[in-house]
Amino acid sequence: MNEYDSNRILDLVKLMGYTATKNPSDADCYILNTCHIREKATEKVYHDIGRLRKEFRNKKKPMLLVTGCVAQAESQEMFNREKYIDGVVGPQSYHQIPEIIKKIEKKKNKINKTEFNVIEKFDTLNLIKNSNSKISSFLTIQEGCDKFCHFCVVPYTRGPEFSRSFNEVMNEAKQLVENGSKEITLLGQNVNAYEYKNKNNTMHLSDLIFKLNEIKELKRIRYTTSHPRDVTKDLIEAHQSCEKLMPVLHLPVQSGSSKILEAMNRKHNISFYYEIIEKLRKAKPGIRFSSDFIIGYPGETDDDFNQTLELIKKVEFINSYSFIYSARPGTPASKLDDVDPINAKKRLIKLQAILEGNNFNYKKEFLNKPTEVLFENKLKDQDKYFGRDKFLNPVVVESTQELTGQILDININNFNHSSLFGTISSNEKRNFAA
Ligand code: SF4
Figure 1: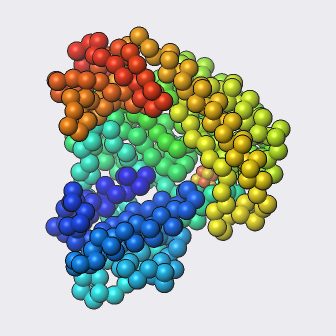
Figure 2: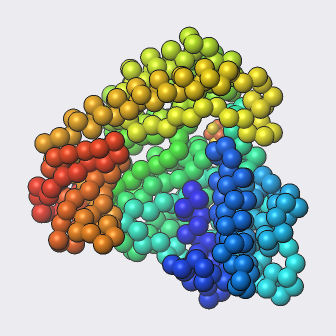
Figure 3: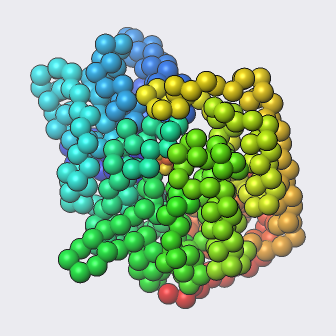
């Protein structure tokens, strides 16, 4: 989502005459767009600012704005700690950046904007064309969260759930496709909680997917990040019927133990999660799942951890993320006692070795078979192109022909822990039914 936000911030400041510079030491204005989800995010920001100070020691100081969730969480405290900062702007206030820049330019005083103005933000953004022209683009449709998992800061930094209007999302999707995008990933902290009511109807994520499926030039649709509780019947039907909806779903589970899920306030148990997986598999044979795992959540025993391993074995997740639990300030879980860190580390190593092994076996299955790849860009200074297959696997291919934007069958002949490598086995663009 920060990538989407950064692009939209650029669209806003372009209207003031700013352009993005490839040479950061020439910048007149720095915008550090931050994420707060990982541990030490705040420290990283101060570290980056220290680096900037050094870089500009003998030059005119650039204007410095800190935006995103660290700005929201730290707010005024940032000015107390770092005098180099000129503005602190929360993720629901970034539409005001042009105004903030003008004020700072004029009066040189510090500005803090961390209100939850999400409606005003999208009202402003809807008036400005999205200029992103990547082959694969992000499109925010929903923000915020009402679920309050006990370990998570998102409900406090992004605010309550908000869904953008159906028509505005469709308009922006069409802009992206006109700009050249062939793949759109719909974004939201709880993307499948998307719900937009107009006079006559209530529209859900599945309605958006069905509508996007009709855009001829759009070839692929994805969405992230979803919550198991919001995987509804209509969404499962979209997986069954929409050919352009890709057959891989990131469905965070965090733990395989119902006891820990309850402690996390995830509001579902593990049987429910298994049921969702089964329904999706039935609707879309061959669908694969990735997930997030928090290891060593307060109260996690060896038995709880073993249930997570059992889940991984059964679902055969691919390309998943796993972390040792770290307390986020202000969350209910931060008041609980941590699991012994040595034990938590041992568990993480064990779990990651299993996920790695699964990934290795999974990637091996691709060898000597064709896989359909959408090429996104040429690698710098090389006759190589980067793309992704339907399952989001990175694929690299050597070619002297321009491949960007094409969908080709690639014969996979090698792989490493992150990517597949292959050669073109068909030169024809694939046609998709609209
Ligand atoms: S559902 Fe996701 S975003 Fe919402 S509180 Fe839980 S982990 Fe955070």
